[in-house]
Image 1 (cartoon, rainbow over the protein chains, first blue to last red):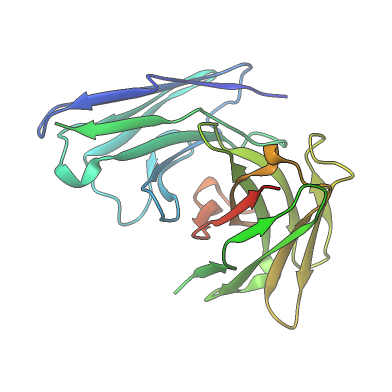
Image 2: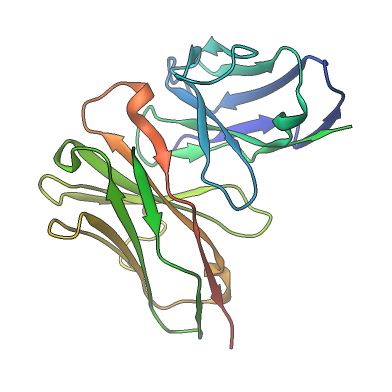
Length: 107
Length: 122
């Protein structure tokens, strides 16, 4: 089974900062990774699909990159509403696997 | 608009079973599958299995094989996840999410339910 290692587990940043979150897959998964934003009590929201494609309606400050085993989610200019947990999911095969999540706090 | 609306919170005793529902609306169900995923306190999301609505074909994680049953009610446009022989380790928030069969990455777990808290306690 594929394992996803996500880092950091938490971070604190200020409005306007650039933030980067990474996920590493235990084997090559091409570009088969989605990134999500999750706020407490809400449904997870798809941000990035296929490693680097912005989901419709998602602000352009969110971007994704990577292929193979190493992937990155970047928020270019942090906004107050970006405080949430972010996680990656591999959809290369089943069983699906998720990163452990990154809790982003806005200072 | 697309919605996946899950049933309410449950409290169960160890050894009992729980059945969580996920009512879908706003899309063509026959073209989609429904995944079930859970998150225990302090843990990462854990994939449990999925069902293809068109033919009710299922695929389960080995972790839950034999203990979980996922079904689809065509008349109610609702997916169900039943988990048996509950222990305290099954205390978690359970989510459903849709995927378009044969679709692109943007149609893979693009919409999720709001989550259902299942608490297992004696």
